[in-house]
Amino acid sequence: MENKRAIETTCIQGGWNPGNGEPRQLPIYQSTTFKYTSSEAMGKLFDLEAEGYFYTRLQNPTNDAVAAKICEMEGGAAAMLTSSGQAANFFAVINLCSAGDHVVSSATIYGGTSNLLTVTLKRFGIEVTLVDPDAPEEELAKAFQPNTKCVFAETVANPALVVLDIEKFVRLAHSHGVPLIIDNTFATPINCRPIEWGADIVTHSTTKYMDGHGMTVGGCIVDSGNFDWEAYADKFPGLTTPDESYHGIIYTKRFGKGAFITKATAQLMRDLGAIQSPQNAFLLNAGLESLHLRMPRHCQNALAVAQYLKGREDVAWVKYPGLEGDKYYALAQKYMPNGTCGVISFGLKGGRQAASAFMDKLQVASIATHVADARTCVLHPASHTHRQLNDEQLIEAGVDPAMIRYSVGIENVQDLIADITQALD
Ligand SMILES: *Cc1c(COP(=O)(O)O)cnc(C)c1O
Image 1 (cartoon, rainbow, N blue to C red):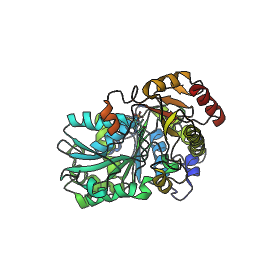
Image 2 (cartoon, helix red, strand yellow):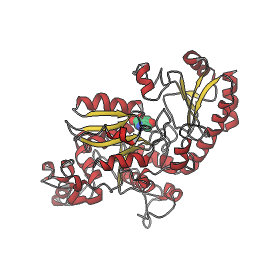
Image 3 (tube, helix red, strand yellow):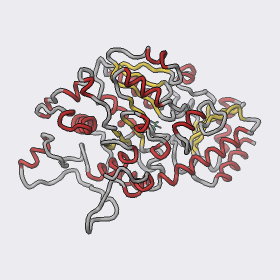
Image 4 (tube, rainbow, N blue to C red):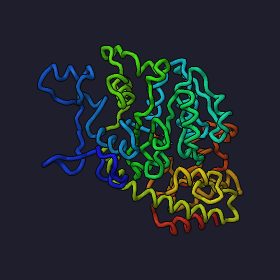
């Protein structure tokens, strides 16, 4: 894989390198199974002794081509697609944690991930401590326990739009001998590549900008290959001691920089089967081909809308990390100088009621449980995505109950501003 070409070229050409006479476009391997000419060849696949495909519950060539593209975009060593962003975060965490283990996570994360960590993983016996990502390092260090196995955070939090001080989190995780997992959904590798800042594992909901057209739910996990599991072998026995379900293979010994992804594929995909369909991977690939063109437009449009809203009398506050004066402007400039994302949030002086009335009047922007789409869409987290949280929990997650999340699409920005103007008026 040519790691040195520019990300724009990778968006178009990464992952699939057809040989002489092979299809220019990535084929959809719409096949559950793969044929072998000898029983022994197939047996070797089951022992992880040979590379290859045998069943699409674990791996599929279309998926792997798209995962390889995202891997190259993020500057990782190995990657896999999952059926959703939720599955990606679930797998990334449970590939490291078992019952009795502990996770330190930023409190300002996506509502679904917050449920996954604090409700569902708790039922699995995995404890989570949520921390304020803006807290000083000494304060954050107190959240770690001897059984802590990873740190989790989002580059730009959905929907709080908190920009993570990635280097601070890298230092914290590494000084406690654990990897940092970053959900990079909102920034995308076009705007930020967390691995370059020292993050170990990057996850995505590819449902958002990567697909970009609201067509397919999907996820991805990229491993940097940089975390030294063997240096903390006692913390990560799943990677550093024999896996009896594969005749005693030791992932770090056999697969090196591919250990984390191979283990997640061989154990978690095998047992849980949360794989993306090859059809969806094909559509995701088509989305990725224009990601480098769409992201700058999302960011330009969002900045213009944020500036307009900031000038309105009836708007109480506007949050957009790309907006000068925003609490996260400096961090955004450091980690994402070319732009953060297309999502902004704001509150109306009229509060909750005004938010609903405003949304009902919008004609170009649609009310949708979606975000980071080519089409502008709008949501009221307190009544939609975060409705399971009470006001106190909302505030802890960085969500004002009056917050409107406005995901700026790539339409003509004057049309968007005109739409907002008539709705506010
Ligand atoms: C949407 C989202 C998820 C969950 O992804 P799905 O594809 O909906 O399962 C995870 N993290 C972030 C930051 C998201 O925006």
